[in-house]
Image (cartoon, rainbow, N blue to C red; front, side, top):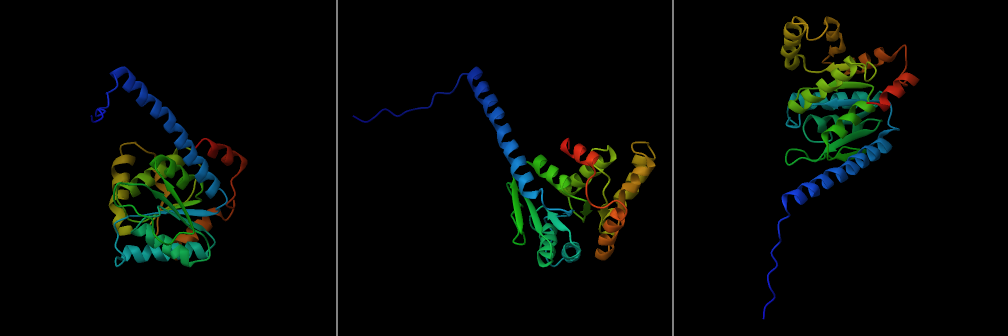
Length: 242
């Protein structure tokens, strides 16, 4: 006589909801672990510059060469270089930094498609949650350099502009590279956001547009010439609440 086939019995709706709530609660511990692990690995990597750009840019594109040049210039100038750790411009930036004298850092994200870790990373940290990864980009960067990219790049740009504008973090250089790519966006911000009082006119000063890799490095040093790269006590306190 064959054994009876066991058929799973579905949970009653009230028990199913409780089981889902329990999963959600336990998920918080995974998020906490992600923050703790990343903070411990990255806290000593200073000064660092976070660099962003498209994952879809091919190695034969001019943006790829530009990203590699910027990564190398920053690395040789003494900056650890933090990218998203994936292909395209992220890879080019890590590649340039990896060839330089400072650390090349990749903050990778698990995605259903498109993202895979590039081979040019001295330090590689993988995240499941975008929001935890975004905190790490901002928390340890003394500057943001943003090359042409898509929605993810715009998301990072909007995030850092919001944090600086609202005083959640200290003012840092936010540099757009690729003037032809970004000019229309800056014109729209001035024409619509400023003219309709969605932002203050001086908020436009938060953004610099520089295409030359050497001048990108110069702009970062110029910003910190009088104050240095170290956080003040007040800035450290604010960073805890980022």
